[in-house]
Length: 159
Image 1 (cartoon, one colour):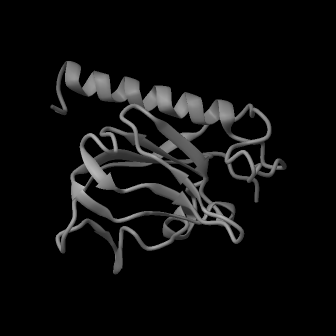
Image 2: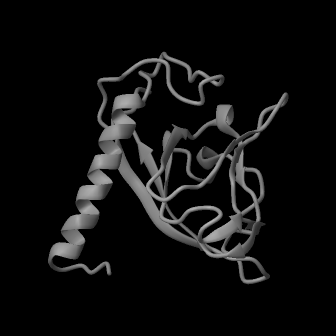
Image 3: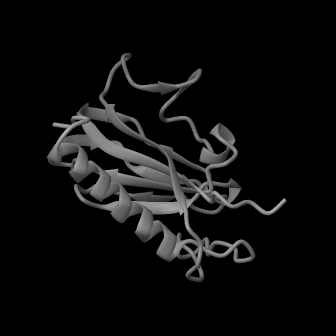
């Protein structure tokens, strides 16, 4: 259980910091482009990212699914189009497809072929938030899918 006092809050802070450090290790410097074939980054960076937003999500089948603005969660989107300062995104899965729910795959949408990531408890997926990573979550067909979504920005921007 998360609370704003005591060890529960400290645990959440430690988890968030470890995820931020992992994203920093994999984040490209501003001049490096993501490697779409490997679905990751091409070079390590020496930059400090700040966690700008984090949210727990619960996805279930049916009409009461979580939505963002006017779009359902399964709509293709770019995270950076939600908030321009989001440079890197992450998803930490808290449940496993086939054990806790069905459907709910994370899909990177490419012109030639979509790349699916099967949710597995403890799996962390990180990626840049811009147009190179158009994505969606496929509809959950049964059970409940839980994850932690994280969005990072570089606090020092060059104008």
